[in-house]
Length: 317
Image 1: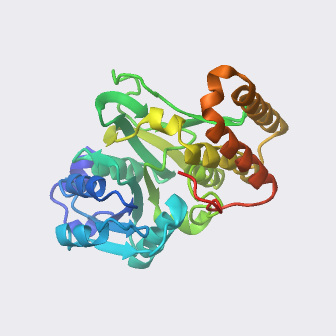
Image 2: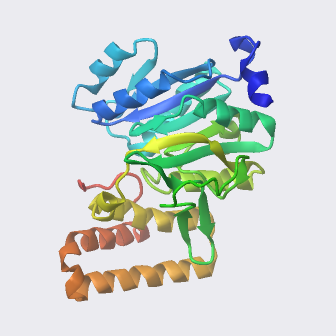
């Protein structure tokens, strides 16, 4: 069994070395819980790099005190998911690690999740990116993501297995997917060298999907590893009413279509979908409470066509 060959009777120096990048922004409690779960990993050849994105809640001091053996990088500013993780990736490259694993700080992981991911990637030299099964933290047997799929005809994406109880429907072996969520994404460092880091134009949302497309088009496989398990503290209800989520998801979907050179069908369906949503949120009495989200969605569309990318110029929560 490959797992035994990687971990039993083999010195740590011979194992592929993985660096886990955890991005923190004013979520000290979540980050400390995430790091506690990482401290229990059964794969010995790894380190953790915490990138603090300009937190003001004392996170940096608390993280350093609790885990002095790991690296803390303070950016001094909110660089977003993309900017913060790219800072971490630069550090991973400089240290000569074999793998980088981008991990959200609002997650907790199974002790064997890193080993399962590395084993899968080592078993097939063509694999460039691997991702685990992600479950809801408050519903630990319900799937949030078992990889992702892209509908190129409609220009949208979806999480595979969303809200399904895990009944073994995805098997035990690594399986190809279009993308894996950046919530927990393992990538081989030679792949990063070949295709480059995350695209800074996105700031947050759709960046990992574009990255996976770039990696796949460079000839690498993207896989979901069912045996690797992570629990995510995500609330779809909160996301659905967040103006920030609506802004970045709206603008960056258009940016994703442009970056991946999607066809006219994807553009046509996306623009029609946006028009219907804006019309419904403007005219239908049921959606009058969503005027803030509507305004930020419209702002996102206008910003895209004006060529404004990266972090939105005004605060949006």
